[in-house]
Length: 112
Image 1 (cartoon, rainbow, N blue to C red):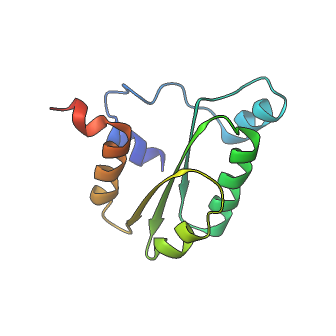
Image 2: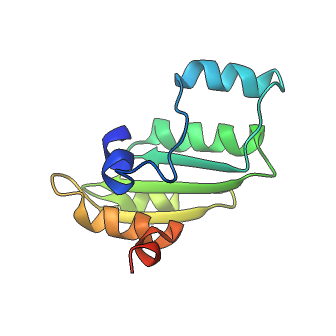
Image 3: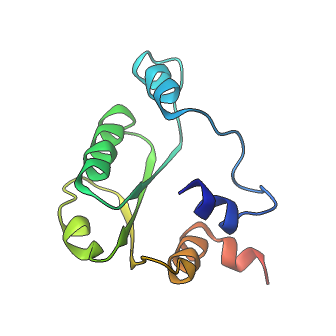
């Protein structure tokens, strides 16, 4: 999924510092780190569970869950916490998903 972020923001206007996920979670749990925005890329139940965990750890953050795969609708329907959802059937070609991500974050508007 990092590749999707890199494709969506090749000049790194929006994707600043990136770090190992486990270290980030450790810092959030220990209250040494917080976030205004949490984006979770989900293509299976484990990722939805991770999103729910992050929602619990960062209740004041804007939560965006990007749900993709062969059949993303059931995964999207399983989310029972407040968040923004980007849902797209994306298996081999991420371009439709990329367009939706760009739209949600305003990146598409910044190109005009």
